[in-house]
Structure formats: C-alpha cells, structure tokens
Length: 381
Image (cartoon, rainbow, N blue to C red; front, side, top):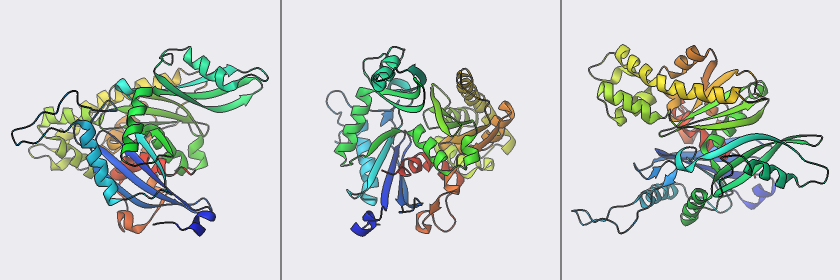
C-alpha cells in the first residue's frame, strides 16, 4: 500500500527488508504505525541461480562471454543475479518513500565479516571513536588495510567503554553497494543476514526471553554463522567455515541417491517418508550422520563464546535459516548440548495481513527462511 502525506506526518512508515542469500532472495515489507505497531503487508521469495554468488561474492566474468551452440552468450553471476532481483522488483515495485534495508550473505569465506567485543579506556575529553577504532585495528584480523569498520557502544562506566566492533572487506561491500544502486534500490542501510536474524528475534522476544543468554544459529545454504545475545543485548558473532545446508544435502545424496530438490522437499515438509526405497528410520540415520558435522561447528562456536571473559551460561539455542526446519535437528542438538533448543520463528509474534500468506498463515520452514528479511524490515528510521 502507498502511504499518503497525512499518514507520514502521523509517523506511519513502510520498510522493506531484502535478504540476498546463496539460494534465494527474500523480500518482506512491514508497515509501522504511529504507535510503534508493525504489520507484515507483503512478502515474496525468488530463487538465486546456482553459482551466481560464491562465498558472499557476486561472480563476475573475466574476459569475453562464451557463446554456446545455441548462439546465446553465457551469463555470469552478476547478470543472473540481476535478472533474479529484477523479477522480484517487477512483482513488488518499491516507492522512493519506502525505507529499504538489504542484507548480504557474506559471513564466511573471502568476504568474511568480523565482529569483536572490546573494552577500552577513554580519558576525559579523549576521542572515543578514534580510540575504539585504533584499538581494534591493532588486533588481527582487524588490522587488514582493506577493512571498512564500524562500532556500537554498549556501555560507559567511568573511563571504561565497552563496544562491539564490526569489520568487512571494503571491496566486497562496494561491489554489493554498486549492485543495489544499479538495480535502482536506494538503501537506507546495508546489513549482514545474521544481524537481520538477531533483530527479528530481539524485536519479537519477550523481555524474559531477550534477557536469557542465547545462541542464534543461522544455517544457510552455503554457510553457518552463530550470534550470541545476553542481558538483552547482542554480544558477539562467529562465522563458521562449515555446517551449511549443502553439507546435509551432500550426505543425503551420497547415502540415499536423492537430488537437492528432493532434499529441500524433505526439509520444507518435514516428512521422511517421501524418499522412495528407504524407510523413515534409514533416512533418519543418514540425517544423523550429517548432524555430526553440523554439531561440531555449533560446539566450536559455543566454545568460542564461553571463552569470553564476560560470557554467561548458555540458556537457549535458537535455529534460523533454511536448515532450521530439518527434521530431527532441533532434538539432536538439545540432546547433545543439554541446552533447550528451538527455532527463531518470529512470525508467531508479528501480525501479518491475511493476503500475504493466506488464511492458514506461514509455515514453520518459511518463517525461519524469511526471518532475516523480517528483521531488516522491522527497523524504523
């Protein structure tokens, strides 16, 4: 819906969140009323062509395009991704008055995003920003000259300042910024998918839940990242080198001979009986083989968090992303860690216009897939 001038004067706004992953582009539009209420008024998803994004980077061709036997030139990742997002924007035109927040899947590989929690001493009349950034830049891997850095102050007590510092590869962010500008998207902000997921959780959690020490695990198509929240605030984040949905799909393909499409059907329906020639027990055992690899990454992330001086005992593990709804994974993690394990599933607590997902509402699997885009769209400027 288009908001008129009177609505804007009253403080009503619309925000669109666009989460670009390796497997799909997720779009969520949220209406913010003048009283702080939020309603999801639109949502959609568009597949990302295979190979268009690798390790968070849009793949660009070097040299001339190869012409196939049909006389058509091969498209590089940039062209394929451009076509995918164009399809989405044709279905959902975005007005200039709408705030747009986009996130990119760059938490691993060459395009890693680094997050650290540091404490510095800032003398009276000292330059707080310069001290925080200089302290961070003196520590590897923040000392890379190609990093663009930002920070958020968590607390100030006397001359001690605690802050979260974020760094990302300048070339990577510049590439994505140029891509969105080329598509005519005027971004109010650009973020990373794991922070969108954290925001969707924090915006919908009760005060009691938000104050618990929680690990939020984003299991994406090509990567896993884990963020930690305690005392109602973001604490830290870790991008993992393994633990993706691709790993589970590869195990199922090797042991059961099924293709990725069938794997995604299993994840979305939560039905182990749809694999021809194998019993549910056999499919379940194959999944547990893959869960071992996922679990090793999750345990590594938890050890990283626990090594922090100010970390508290972990109360909950929350799963998000495409891997959150893999049948049996939630119970497996809870049993292995002894920690309560659930999915983020923020749509349980957000009002949705009935036309968006129909009278039946959104499924659990789609709720976790859309969660980062929802978190981006729940920001208000």
